[in-house]
Image 1 (cartoon, rainbow, N blue to C red):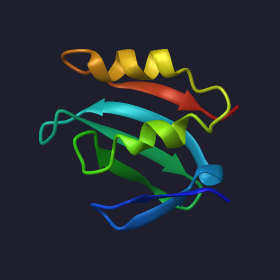
Image 2 (cartoon, helix red, strand yellow):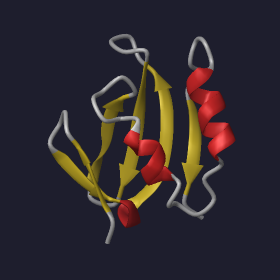
Image 3 (cartoon, rainbow, N blue to C red):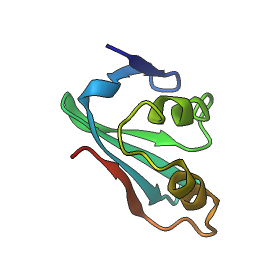
Image 4 (cartoon, rainbow, N blue to C red):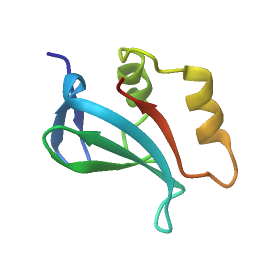
Length: 88
């Protein structure tokens, strides 16, 4: 099982447990990733968090992720809340 570790929170999440990725507006940060997984409450990761750029690499391992959609979403100003990927 491939794991990704979010350093700021110290939490670890397996890619296999991930079932939805959202990008949302945030008052405290430019934007946040909301990672829905089978293990409980969604994991919240600011896009400006240390190491969050490595999430892109992790996301490429998910079937059906469209990287051009992902890049366009985070480059949108202001960020528009949207579902980036959902397991089918």
